[in-house]
Length: 591
Ligand SMILES: [Zn+2]
Image 1: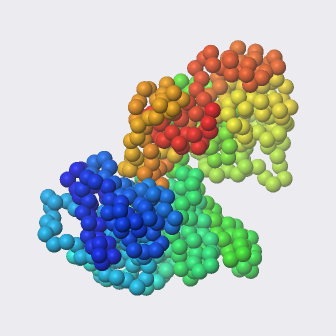
Image 2: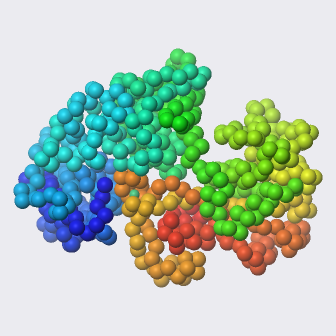
C-alpha cells in the first residue's frame, strides 16, 4: 500500500555500494549517469539524466522516466510515470533500488537498512524473495495467500525479516501472486475453485499444486480481479509471454517459463475437451470456472504461429458490464428518454458506435426496463453471449441472415425485438417497418456518431421517409477508461484546454491525469464507463431527414435543442475527475 499521510518518508536502498541508502524528503532525487545527479549510476545502460523521483500529494512519491534510452523498470516492468509503493524495486540495467516507506511513529530507524547484496544475475530478477514457506506446498489459493502474506513480498528484500530466495525456476509464482495481491480484492484468493469442462463436468484440477494448475489459477484470478476481457498466451524465443486486455488495452502481465506456459495451455485444452491435433491446427472450445457464488465462462482459441501455438482465452464475465440502465452513467434526460420509449408500444432505438463501444450492453439494459412478464421479448444475435431472463434469444446461424430470421420472428407475435446489428438494406427496412407496426425495436449500427448513423441508413438504401418516421432515438457511444482513484494526479487546466472545453468542465481549474499503481496494474485506470450522444427525433428533425438532409443542416436543427456530442460528454466526465482529457481525445477524437 502506498502511504496516505504526510508523516511518511521514502527510503531507497540501492545495490551500488557507493550509494547505499538514501532518505527522501521534500526535494526531488535525480537519477542518472551524469555526476550532477543525486544518485549517480555507473551502469552503462543508464542515460545521463535517466529518471527522477519527486514528492507528490499526501506524502506520496512519483517516479518519472526522463525519456531514457533504455527505460526505467519498476518491479520488472517498464514505466513512464508511476506512483511508488512500499516494496517496489526500481531497476535500471543491473542497478536496483528498493523502495521503503517509513512511518516514524511506529518504527525507529537508528540503523540504516542493509543495502542489497550484490547478486550475480540482473537486478530485476534478484528482486523476488519469499518467506520461509516452501513454494512446493502451494495447494490452493489459501496456500498461495499464506506464502505471500505481507502486503508486498519484495519488501523483505532489504528488511530485517529477509526471507529465503524463491526456488530457482519458481519466480513466476511469486510474481503472479504479487500482481494478484496488488489488485482490488473482488475475487477472493482463498475460495475453492471448480473447473467445469466443455461438457459442464466439474473437476478440482485447479486445486492441485502442480505448476500448470497454479499458473492457471493465478492467471484466472488476475484476469477476474483486473476485469480483463482476454488472456493472450504467446510463445517467444525462450519463454511464453502472457498479456491481458484490460479496459480495451493490452497489458504485459508476465513471461512464464516455456514449460509452465505449455502446461497452462495443456490444461486449457483439456478443459475445452479439444481433440489431439498437430501443432499447426486451429482449435477452439470453451470451459467455465466456479468460485464462491460466481461462475465465469471462457472461450478459448488456439492458432499456430511461427514460434508455436498461441492461445487466446476470452473472458465472458457478465459482471464486468453494468447491469442496469441506471448504472450506465447516462445524463438524466437521456435515461428518461430511453425509459419512456421502453414503455411505449412502438418505437425504434438505434445504438451506434464501433465494435467494443458497449452498444449491446446499453440495449440489454434498456431491455431490462421492459416488463418481460407481460410482453414477448425476442432477440436475434450473432452470437448470443449473455443470457437475459425472460427473453427469447435466437442465435444467427451460419446459413441464416438477420433479415430472414427477423421476418420469421415477426410471425411469432413479438412485442419487443432486438436485432443484433443492421448490416444491410433488407434488415434495416424490415426492422423499421416493424417499429411502425406495433413493435418496439432495438438495434445497433456501425457508425461514428449519431448523425453518421442516420446517413449510414440512407446509404444502405433505406428511403428517407422510412428513416424519418421509424426512428425515435439514436444513441452514439464510446467507452472511456476511468481514472484510478488511488493514484490519479491533479494538474492545472491549460489556457488552451479552458478555451476548448472549459464550458463543459463547469469552470474547474484542475483536471486529473493517470499515474499508475498496484491497484490498476500500473495503467492509471480502473474500469471503463460510457460517454453518450443522443439524437432525439422530433418533428423538426424528421422534417430535415425527409428533405435532402446534409450534415450541416442536421447539426443546425440539433443544436437548437439539448444536444451534447460524444466529446462534450467526455469533457463533462473529465471535469468531474472521472477520466482524463487525453483519454477523451483518444476515444472521441478532436473536433
Ligand atoms: Zn492506480
